[in-house]
Length: 219
Image (cartoon, rainbow, N blue to C red):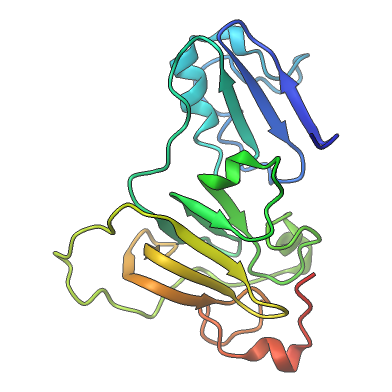
């Protein structure tokens, strides 16, 4: 286990925090219970709430930095009912579903269900976001030009979404998913896409080949 993973033991479940993945969105700290409280030691106290309340908060973490292991016989986390890729305002791509992210470490169980992937090109932890977009001044408000052809079309069927970072190139997605603009609009349902991760595409969130001229390095 990475030294950046902190374990918070409890009677019903243990909570784990992975500093490699946390981008401090704050879903945990703003939850309306006492599981996480800033300034308290320890910050996370699993026994302060019941197990269902704890798992609910942990599963809100969009980066996969928070996970849990139950030892009370309760259910483990399962994938969201469909694969969703959300384009954030001036920030990462948020993925939720049954995820298979190439390059994810074996001790990153959260990113099987939830992940924040870099799209500014500056992360030191590619393909994951590390908030480098803030210092880099990355600007893209998360609009998506695509229009869903059939608004009544059903949601994607369950199944894995493969995410492969191409060498010094885009994120290659394969598997059924919804692409959601930062406005919350479902812009498209697809089975394949090449999404920009260099930050230079003129057709964000899609790749337009700009990584080549920009000399983008995916490492």
